[in-house]
Picture 1 (cartoon, helix red, strand yellow):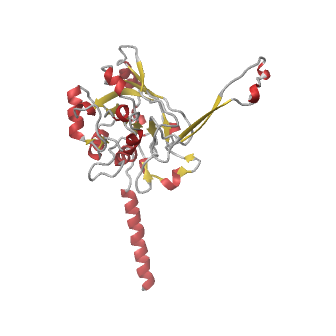
Picture 2 (tube, rainbow, N blue to C red):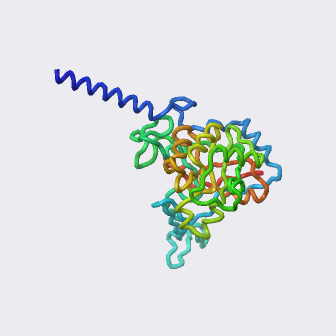
Picture 3 (cartoon, one colour):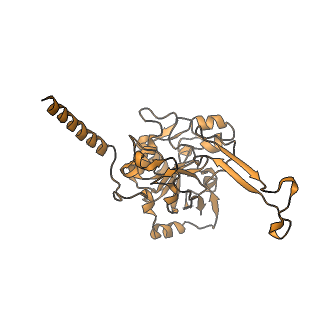
Amino acid sequence: MKLKYLASVACVIGLSAGMVSAQDCEESKWGAEDTAGSANLVSPERTLEAAKLITQGKSMPLGIVIDSETPAFAPRSLNLQVVQPNQQGGQKLSQFGYPGNYNDDILQTWVGIGSQIDGLGHLGEKGYYYNCLDEKEISVITGLTKLGVHDIPPLVGRGVIIDMASHAGKDVMEAGEHFGEAEIKAAAEAQGVEIREGDVVLFHTGWTEGMLESDPTAWVSGEPGINVEGARYIASLNPMAVGADTWGLEPIPPADGDGAFYGHVVFLKENGIYILETMNTGPLLREGVNEFMFVLGQARIRGTVQMIINPVALY
């Protein structure tokens, strides 16, 4: 009798565990085997439409310059060394057929520093990542076995900037200041910006331009950003990627009731939408541009979770 009871309990526990696992993730709208997420929205038609936004023949980098002094989410850091291999003491390289000399460089860095893209394997919940991929199956020390940033195709499409700082009536929003659906809709309407499926949506808060150089410690200690309600609203519009001129996208400290960086879970895990951090949006806005062609081809190091990037805005 006791054995039957224990067997019944084990069966119930097993079924419950299965139900919990099923509830912890939801299959992607692009199918159970999909690993590309919103990159599926890249299409020849959207690329050609975005190209029509190039009216002045100008370009602008969306990435910032970084170095060993750039603050980053702890314990991330960067160290660059420039070396002259086999040229000690002023030796020249006769094997070139002339007295040659050259510089080379060695980079030791976390790739989640400065302007970056977060891949779909970056943040999950309860052990699961995008499309129900289990951390035990994809997260190995030598690199992600699935969802690596190297597999993201070139992200090309229409980019839009929504100036949340202007909507708030200030040049630089404050750390912890946040915005949701109502604020995003009002700002977009006031600026004449329409968010469409497949867009790259960037939020301007003034944070990086206003704080990175003047107070780098404060810059990395907090930030304004999109709250969870706002993240769910933007996700419902099916963008290709969402970013901001902040290092982490969401407000720090988080909005009341929101988990820290839970917008990452909403975008990455739940919807397969890529995140772009520390985007240099100010110069474009000063040019009077909030709609442009967005082009990104990131470095393709196999298995990376994130990557330092410098997308280009063409307008």
